[in-house]
Length: 133
Image 1 (spheres, rainbow, N blue to C red):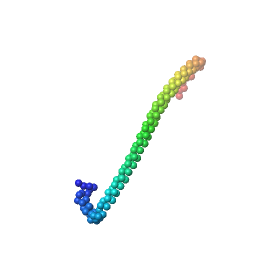
Image 2 (cartoon, rainbow, N blue to C red):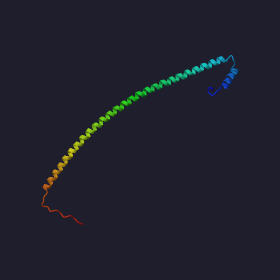
Image 3 (cartoon, rainbow, N blue to C red):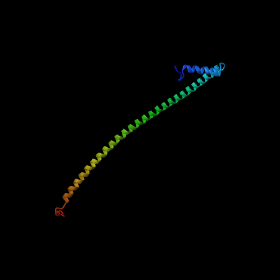
Image 4 (cartoon, one colour):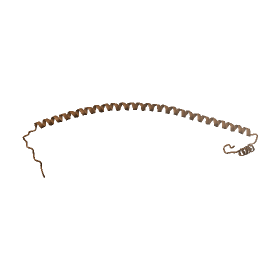
């Protein structure tokens, strides 16, 4: 079994060298200092993890709030769009019926004018011969 790529033999060699270099009287104090440093680093890591967790929770809450507002705005826009389209259809139908009525009145007036022109035309004028080149 290896720990961080270091086998038992390498670990035992490091401990023996540490005992020789540091000495048996300072080894317990050094182990205590090392343990305290590891505990302090774990506390810092835990604090950073908690801070990131709080920030992520806050951002998630903000995201959900904004998403809800966007969905509400989309619903309102869709409702207003449908209302505008229906009003536009009503106005278009009204304009088309008015145009059809005016068109039929104009056609009737044109027919009446053509009939009055035909009756008012003088038959005394002879028809002109076509021009030939």
